[in-house]
Image 1: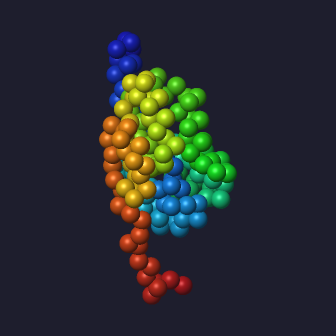
Image 2: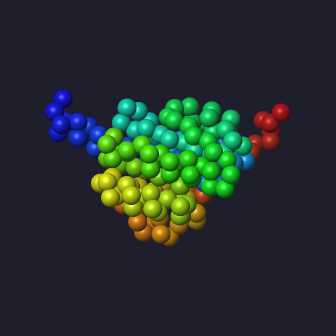
Image 3: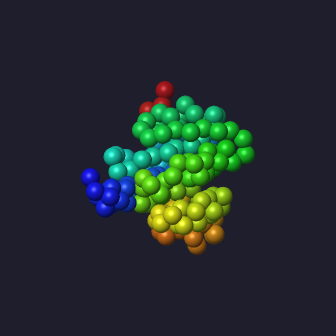
Length: 163
């Protein structure tokens, strides 16, 4: 394969960095909330050979998140901003510019502003996917694209079928 073909091939690839706890508003999220966010992300960016998922969360949410996101790579780190820091490690250590043409950051946290700037400096387009109520103004300004998720909620528990 020629160098131009390799370049085109990696430019067609996408990495999706998911701070799932931020999207579901905490590590104690219910399964339905995590599944709602998973399904929404998969509808936008189907996982496959041209789309790699990196999902980060704390150890408190490990079981729920691992089963809700069966594919991709999983990282967990606890403590303040643990999931954010795990994803930032990916940005800083994995030479993403050699493998991907686009990065999707599924989080509205301000901590990702510098990561987006770094990715831009390597020629990687950045999309941010977040609930607009939880999206940093600075992150909104620096991203190439914004995809607004609907707010969590709207799930109705049907007590007639609960046992």
